[in-house]
Every structure is written in structure tokens, then in C-alpha cells.
Amino acid sequence: VIDILIQNLSNHDIITDEEQILLRSIPVRERSYNADEDLVSENSRPPFSTLLLEGFAARYKLTPDGTRQITALHVAGDFVDLHAFLLKTMDHGIIALSPCRVGHVDHSELQMVTQKAAHLTRLLWLKTIIDGAIHREWIVAMGRRSKRAHLAHLICELYRRMEAMGLTNGYSFHFPLSQGEMADVLGLSLVHMNRTIQSLRKDGLIGWLNHTVTVLDWDELCTIADFDPTYLSLRVEPR
Amino acid sequence: VIDILIQNLSNHDIITDEEQILLRSIPVRERSYNADEDLVSENSRPPFSTLLLEGFAARYKLTPDGTRQITALHVAGDFVDLHAFLLKTMDHGIIALSPCRVGHVDHSELQMVTQKAAHLTRLLWLKTIIDGAIHREWIVAMGRRSKRAHLAHLICELYRRMEAMGLTNGYSFHFPLSQGEMADVLGLSLVHMNRTIQSLRKDGLIGWLNHTVTVLDWDELCTIADFDPTYLSLRVEPR
DNA sequence: CGGTGACTTGACCTCTGTCAAGAGAAGTGG
DNA sequence: CCACTTCTCTTGACAGAGGTCAAGTCACCG
Image (cartoon, rainbow over all chains, first blue to last red; front, side, top):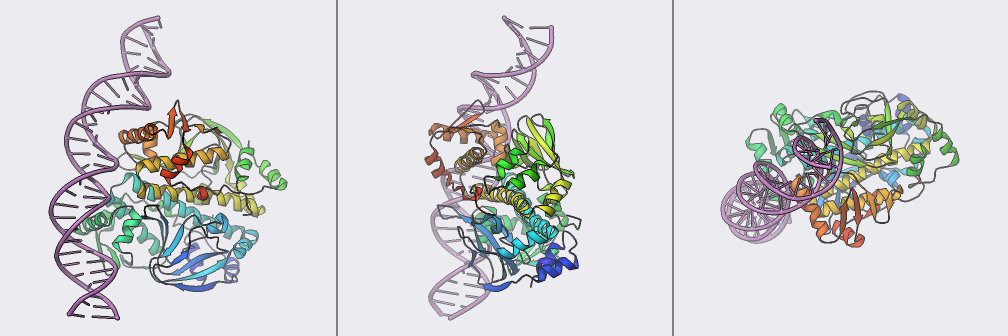
């Protein structure tokens, strides 16, 4: 169960046997959610953090006029609300975008890790810092890229992240979001989301069918996206 | 010198005397920068992190077509590139937006803190998590708010953050950014930035003169911004 | 076989970017 | 002390990206 976290952290640094034993000793409660169920609600103060074992989830905020903005996408292996461990109060909600299997880890266990395992603590910290780096990249995409480039960038990012967790199949990966949900990711209207996707499709850059995205021309997609994977820190080095 | 960090962390939790002594024992090298100088360059691997003692700084990324997006603003007391401690390679640059005085803290010292002081580590971790929360709020503003509301939100945020560091004077605070720099924050053109500022001015919500911003109607500004300060975590509680 | 949800497409309109020009303020050098 | 440059702010005119409204198609499902 917690092996998926070990696999995730291993993308950034070596996890020693001792550390693996410590992680495996942490009790994890498994639970399943349906699509569209909240994994964590805004303004709640959960006493545990949620490790995503299977499925897709999103952080989101609602505006007073009823629109939604998705601020982050999460795939299997992501510790989706590690933040709540220190933030205490959730400033946003987390929703399942597909049926999800998760593991709940009590904050007291994380507290124990911070007291006893400095290196593991730094790696968990790193994961939240990478979340921040992804946020910055999204801000750049929203502020200074065309919608077409923004979408291309997002697909490049998701491809690399899912590849790191072994969730890709060649240049394809399972991706269950509807175009309406994607619109809430990019911050645009459903209609324009559709037209933006079609623009990439017509140029033979991506395929998107049956909840499966396929990158048809990786190099060209990276070029129009101005994609540089440095911010994902997918490099094993001492941290 | 490092007292400003203690003051900053004290906004979120109690710092014990022992912890203060530990922090004060850390060597800090002071340095000054002119406006428009890079404090940290993109793609560099600095062996130290930068604590902003005085002035304003911004994280930014450049796009291939020469435009700039500012992804975060930093005020005195912010540990502007704590991230580099774990990220190792900077995925963005940090620039001085005014003359700045900073303190450099070697990563080896931060490493020492993570080994010896679990609670302080959690507080430094918290600061990077709050940076992430601010990023999310910016994403919501860029994706789903009007430009007017986005600007209002930013002013509310800056007011609260500067107030927490004792940098406000009534409802006014020093703010040296040009409108062109603000355009790079909100991700719009200089011309429209100007019109957006004027819109808030005409309605008597803010004043903006001589590099000084004044909030003229806090309640109304918060309303149109849909501002909820929860995400800033400006609350003293055990972390 | 009707209903539901997701995806498409067209028409139209608004918000925001671009281009251009002018007004102030501030600093520089003779 | 005065011309001169430079930078920032301001305003107008126009164009283009993206939003809104509306309708229609398609696949899936009970």
C-alpha cells in the first residue's frame, strides 16, 4: 500500500532500506470514493492526510458566482493533502475525478516522521515544494501562454508525471477528465476548451479518445508548449 | 538580522527561546542588491538560500517570445528561495523590484536545522506550503476572476501580509512596483493594467500614488475580491 | 427507444491586446 | 539653470481571442 509512496519518492532520491521499513510501519487506512465525491472538504480540519493509491483527483476552489477553478491535478502516488498536516485548516477542496482508492495516514504518524527521520521529512517537504513549482508553471501558462500552448504544456506535464509513476503505455495514458472539467483546469469556457483541444488534434499533435490521451508528436508538442521538465525535479540526487 | 525570520515564523506558531537561540547561531551573510538585479538566476544551483531583509522581490519566468510572468511577490521577512534547498536547481529567477538587503544562509545550516530541530523544520516547511497556498489563490484569480477582482484580491493579500510584518501604516503601505511590473504579475498588458487600476481608483476603493497604495474601503474591496485570508495561515497554533 | 450527458458547431458580442501618441516627472550633462 | 533624454503613466482607435447563447449530434444506458 505505502509502496506507491516509496516509488514516488524514489523518483527524487534514494530511499534506504531503513527508511522503507519505517514507512511500511505506518498504519494506513484504505478507502474508496466515487467520481465527484469530495476526498477532503474546504474549511475542514482533517486529522489525517490522504495518499492517492488509484484514480485521479483535483484540488479546487469555488467562486461566489458558482464557477470552479481547479488548481492542481493529482495522479496515483500523490500525497494529495500533505499540506493539511501543517496548514491545519483546508483552504480548498479535493475532489475525485474518477473512482479513487486512497490511504489515510494520521497526522500523528507524519509528526513522528518529522521527529525521527530527517531525510524522509525533507523528501515529503520536497513533494510539497514540487507541487508549488507546478503551481508556478500553471501561473505562467495562464498569464502568458496562448490557450493552445497552455493545453499542450499541461499534456506534456501529465505525460511526464504519469510516466514517472509507470502509468503510461507508450505515448498514451488514461485520462478520464471531461472537457468541462478540463475547462475548469485551464480557466476557460467549455466551448473554447473544445475548440482548443480540436486545434491540437487537427494538427496531428495529440489524440484524445475514450478517456485516453495519446501524444502523437512529442517534440513538436514540447516546442509549442515551451515545455522544460526541470520544475518536476524528476532526478535522483541527494536532498 | 535573523530576527526578521523569527518575527515571520511567530505569525504562525510560538518559537521557543531555545529555538530562537538555535536560529541566532546560524551565520548569515548580508548583501545588498539594486532594483532589477537578479537575487537568484534561473537554472543556477545556489549553495545557500536568501532571506529578504528589506525591499521587494519577485519570482519570475520568461517565455520564448520575451514576455515575463511574475509568479510570486516577496516582502521583507520572506525566505525567498528556501525552495532551492531541496529543489537544488532553480526552475525560475528571483529579481529585486526595489533596492534590497538580503541575508544568505548556507544550505548546510538548513540541513542542520532539519537534523536537530524538528519543530523549526516544520515551520520552515509551513512557509513553503503557504507559498503554495498563495500560488493556488493566484491561479483562481487568473482563471476565474475578472481582472478588477484579481487586482483587488492581490491588494488585499499584500495588505494582510505586510501588516503581519509590521510594514503597513494605517491602511497604506509602500509598494514600489511600476504598472508595467504589475502587468507581469496579473498576466495582462500594460495598457489594460492601467485601466484596471483606474477602475478601482475611480470607485474610491484604493489610492495609489508615489509608490504608496492606500486601501480606502477595505470591506468593499474584500467583497469584490472575494477575499478570504484563511490561505495565509496567519494564525498562531501548534504546527 | 427515449433520456441523459458529453461533445460539436455556428453566430454574435465583449474583454483584452496591440499600436500609436501624448503628458508628466525625474534625472543628466553642458 | 536649462535643454534633453528617459521612464512611467494615460488615452484613443482598432483588432483578435475568448465568452455566451443556442442548437444539434453522438454514444451510452436503463
